[in-house]
Amino acid sequence: MKIYRNTQEIARKEKLGRRITLTGLAILFLGLLASFTPTWFPPETPSPNPLIRFVQLYWMYISFGALAIGFIASNLGSYYINRFAPRRWPGSNRIARPDELLAQGLKGFDDKYSLFLWRLPGASYLLVGPPGILVFIVRGAKGR
Image 1 (cartoon, helix red, strand yellow):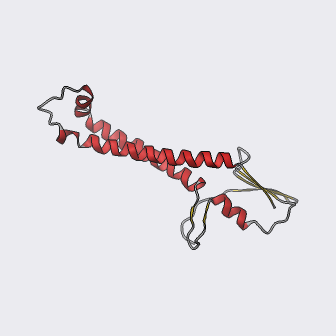
Image 2: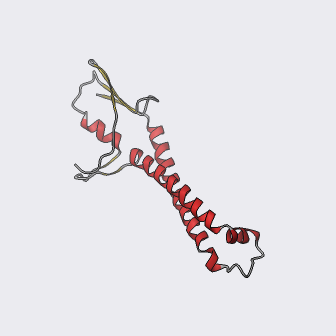
Image 3: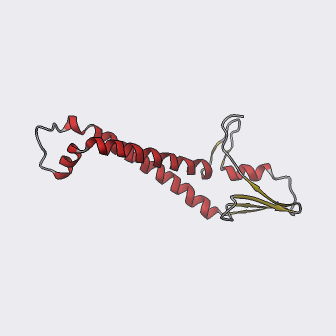
């Protein structure tokens, strides 16, 4: 079987997932710091720094906004990491990406078949052979 991978796209989305996850965690940390602001700087003694004064007045909105944005960003980043980053699979010592495991599972096909991984915009996993075109929809499932 011939395998055609878009490795540049896979590497780009893996890097994007890691960056989005770290950004989301940093936003969550800043929201945590904003929630501690009232105890660090009591409201009866106003700060001369305008940034600290702004955080002092609107700490609750900043904290809840950071919670929502950080949670969404962290989940979006972990979605990309689950699809494009290599990881250890349950019941195996192998570290691989999901597309590598799919290619390994289909290794018994001869050269009449071609597997396209992340090459076409509408289909992530596409198997082309004599019987026709098969589009795989790969879903993450925990457990056996």
